[in-house]
Image 1 (cartoon, rainbow, N blue to C red):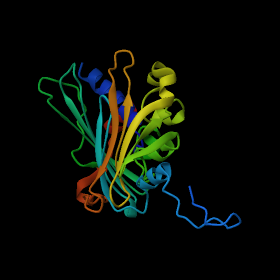
Image 2: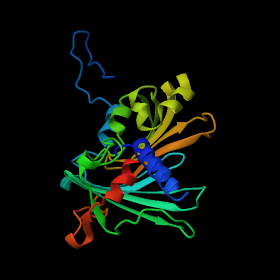
Image 3: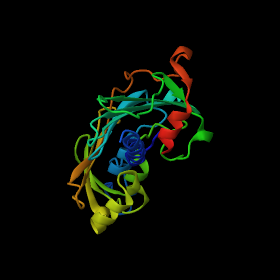
Length: 268
């Protein structure tokens, strides 16, 4: 499973480039010596938010992850250790769209890659329309391609939220700042973008929401303008807890071994 949008974006960019080349407080009781009365501490916002991030105890759910150029969608089934990831990217100069999907179940992964709006283009790889089973030994980018199930926290939010200052502005609504100047920031943007943001990366504003059952439903970071990249929101949303489509191993008739052309494209 691709854990971060940044990794997925890098993968898509590489594939697109290859395709482009091919195509051209408690209160005290009364009395000075009395012991403090037992009280129940108010929930700590950070602890509450961290506990809300999807984990292996959650029912299946769907997700969407967005940055300034890419959108990822999919489903996660923690009980069966399975994830489904989908993305689309438009190759502006050539006009075609690449549709890419990954399916991981435990320690196996499959991919499906198709192209649309290809009229007049030649040289794009011809790939099976079925799920293509991947051999990890034939992949050169272990970070960019999901080869096994790695957990329900598909957006790597727990390590990110560890670097936050959080307040609860209303029931289920949280806000604060997050430090994305270190390693956690690479899950959202490139090292170049982090360098461009500079010191501001240590206090980027964010908002998050949690539903009545204590489950995270949204997380959003406001990223400022850097160079030619305008300000944008990096967002993660979760929905359909318990009702998301099932994720399972594809039927034998719907899967084939990935051909050499698939590895050439993915590894480019």
